[in-house]
Length: 98
Length: 472
Image (tube, rainbow over all chains, first blue to last red; front, side, top):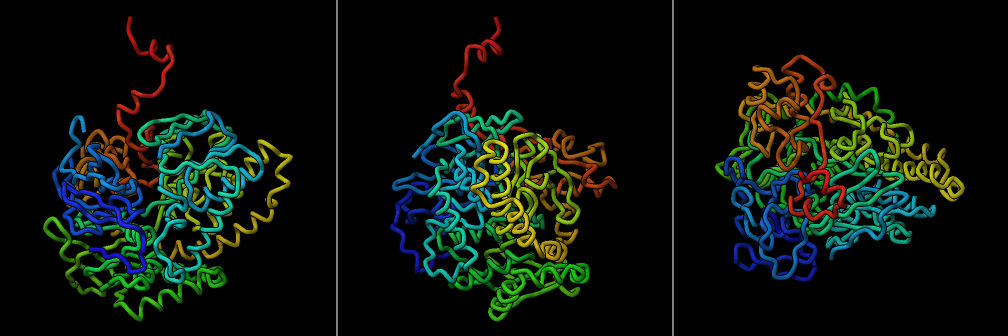
């Protein structure tokens, strides 16, 4: 859906999406990294299970909710990627203890 | 890196580091007031100047001179003594000017003598059939990715809607080598006539020449369809096509990405939760705070600057930030106010920056069918409530947005009404034959962004706090 511009010379950052290594760039938010990757990043909603992707990318819509390093319901559009970060695409509502 | 505020109390706390917040914090600190700037994003700039100090887009002309103007504001702020904390989500502000802020998963509390809210704007909801499908995003979302990560659309891309941002985004995407297949312009034909009486002010504003040049730049490269009166997205679990009607003729085109935009509206959640009075603005079709000429709200000590005070654009936001900060300085340290630009100069700067706004507001006033949906179109994205659900609730007695919560949970999901509130107000107003002002808005309360129970439980408490809730 999105591609990176060639002028982007930021250093790479490796993150893991459901255990699979994904190349991100330093300064990407988790949501931007997911949308730039070839992963199926669609979460499913807590209410009906409908598939969603980030909508606003500015912290207001909550359609980017994702599990980051074991913590659920994080707004992926507000969290910068970090080396080795473990992302899980969140299916349904946040689970107790996560 | 987690950084809690250094002090428990400040003269001025500014919330939001966009154009207004950057200018307000720098001005307040320059006058010697202890100043704290809290911002939810990774770096300064807000949305307009998003990623201004970190963007990977190095070819400056691609983002345009208006964007790079933000760098000066950041420089001025950094040269000042203002304390700045990013990734800090303010979740409570009350009449006592007590502020609760979540930083790195822990909450901190600060008290202010004056608060300047610079929480800016968000994109107006665009509730068309299929707007929750993966592959449908706001134009602002695409612009955010473009500025902060140099990402551009590369699949079949349709941009739909109206307003200056739409054309700016299209130009930026093309300059960075991205793909746009078609632009669907939803500006109502009648708006051109309605806007005509205000055209002179606009013609003499800086927006005119820039806007025209940008539209020309885009139109030479992309097919633009104007007079679009109906719009929907469809697909099975993913956007597959966009369907529209223009000139009475329906057309359906395959698409991987649909970017929607019909203007921006004040982000009112924090101000409303602090009990600041808002009124329905019938031209801008949104809630705007009741403010005096210096941005002071109906809650003593709370001022609002920038687009959160009513949409005025980035240049006006900067001036409003300076005005609100100067007013704070005049109240708290009148002797030092002489160091700052005189209020009369600021007010004339503001009048200049706001010139042409009425023209833009009138021309780009979104059409009713794109604001007030019907049938199975989702109104509340979080709780997945449709227009029909809302109307059915009205039919059995729901009188306004707050009653509707009990019927349908609209506005009670994580976004707290940000993506449905205006739609619900207008939909219910229409159904009940009332004005939006009469129908009202959700009663907003802290926490204005969700925080975990664990974070609340970890908040430091006094013995009296514990006694107040523990029995026996």
